[in-house]
Length: 558
Image (tube, rainbow, N blue to C red; front, side):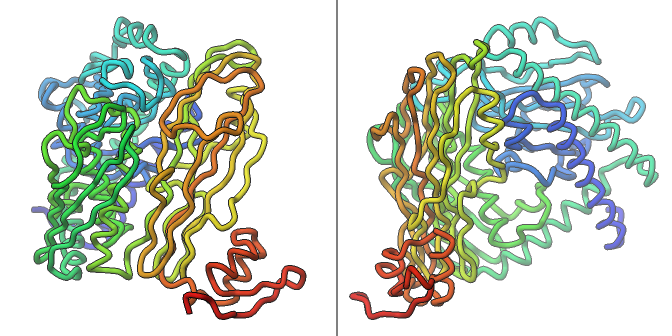
């Protein structure tokens, strides 16, 4: 294997990451939908000619970082590398070959230097619509969820497949947005390919494989060194979460043995009749994410970094579903892989884990805006992020995701839905020596003058986020339509003027809340994160509402 000195390798590796970030910026600037422009529901990746990851964009959703290499392998099985030509563009939105649901489009472009294939660029984005019933947990088969594409060529040697594009347009509610986003993916991959060729010219590289070998080996070595610091043992955890009509049990066994980690989800419930099932690609990606968070969070993503991690799940369980189970809302179950595994690793490395987060709300709207134009869009809302030893949980922060929350003004302008109120929910963060992040209340009004269909896909309405090591649970989540609580995975038709709202959940606390420093409790009260009543009840602190001062008092727990 060709040797690279540490400084040169670092410089070239960072340059590749900057190219991936350039692809992201190109994608964001040319996309039509707010999911990409504002929400950053995306990833961009560079691969070598063998399909191994060179670099991924800094602004990337964690699950996509884990699924993209697998997606490329599916594409190369359909179109072997030797059959590809300059100008080809390959895509798929198949849940089992892509990211776990139909809404994410995976677009790949081979990179040629002259006649030689030297690598691949790939981008993944969440489309605003994919037909079917709309983004919802209600379908009972994948066929009802929308337009499903296998691995297909969108472009042949630079020529656009117009028939495929027209078929795509005919199957979605907002064709201009969808096609605009699709072509933004094509464009950004072209930008990435040119930048990769410039990189090769600058450094006099004819073949990226030796550099890729060095990147993979350094990542594998660094990860193994960190895994050796985790005590050998078998660590188990289980969580109960909401299903459609009854709870789902997720179970995991983590085996750590001399720098290797084996994760198995034996004991997990079977698939459910609703679109919250999870393909194994998504489960595997979030398993990698947890191990990375607990070892080297800053280590760039590639196959070397996960070489020592094995992930298995029982065939056709809810975390390894098979077609035709529906998967549109797979985040509502798949995101729980993170707290599930954090709870297991807490037995081995308690100082590294975070408490259970509140998770995200995703709701969809379909209908017409004030001007009478068709709309189909998603809105993401966040509760509290988990606390950890030495730090409080972040409030209203998406977990476990790297997305941003779309500004209310942008959402209002696009849809005609008014955000009437958006404020923190005091006392929603789980009490602890380190407090869980708090949730928020958000109230929306249908100001379009038309009927709107709204679908919720969320969790934490029955099972709140748990704390760790004496930390208490966060508050539950509740959805409302015109002031009445509704099912967290239902669809509702709203008349003009109707309101829908959410009380976003809080995250669990870390450590005994009675050990929280007095000044931090008083600061929480000043900032509206904890009420005077909550300070007394949960932290044993009597607060003087007028002066802002306070003192410790005896509690029942003491």
